[in-house]
Length: 294
Image (cartoon, rainbow, N blue to C red; front, top):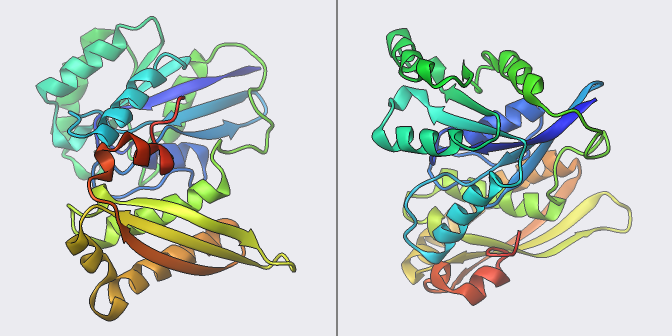
């Protein structure tokens, strides 16, 4: 039996969460085209007869500009101290920057097995992919080009990971696919829809708090009440929209995904509140579930 923890790291918007979801075969992390989608360390577990792999999805690596972002960077960097393998995801179609090179050199110098994943290969010319493969060929670590969206080369990536897993017993029961609760996933689903349906500057200043998460006596309907926290009164107005149209749209899409995830009907109530500059408040960050000790 082989099992272990795989830390999935890389710059913001490199496709880490999409890749983890595909590898695990279940949605354990939200995704959007916007950077900073992932704020927490989220685990997805893949189990088969011979192996068990716990993938740790992390926030994207970038320069922090507030207390929340600093917490996210600390989370990403600390992850490599707790894993057996480092999986570094590089957005291949964006090209290789000096920042990418420095990060790869930094994390590949650990004493841990290191795998470089070139992501989003379905939207890039083959000539660029060949150039990037040559760029890192002398480093000595495995390089696996993939397209998570199309499932391209994912089996090969799993083969490479399994080769490097340490030999030890299962870490979790076979039916475990994530370390996150249903309550957490409900809040993330709402935040995902805000990321997808709102303008760029608004979602990054939003937190989602679950006030009520209960199942009715018949076990058929979840009653869920959420607070959407934003930083500015004008952001609240945009989130609500004229006559409440925007928040109704966001809530409808969120409710449908919640019902799919929970496999039950959902009665959802959403409130929008303002807490100015909450991302720089240690007290509010803890209250909203961030900046906890790992």
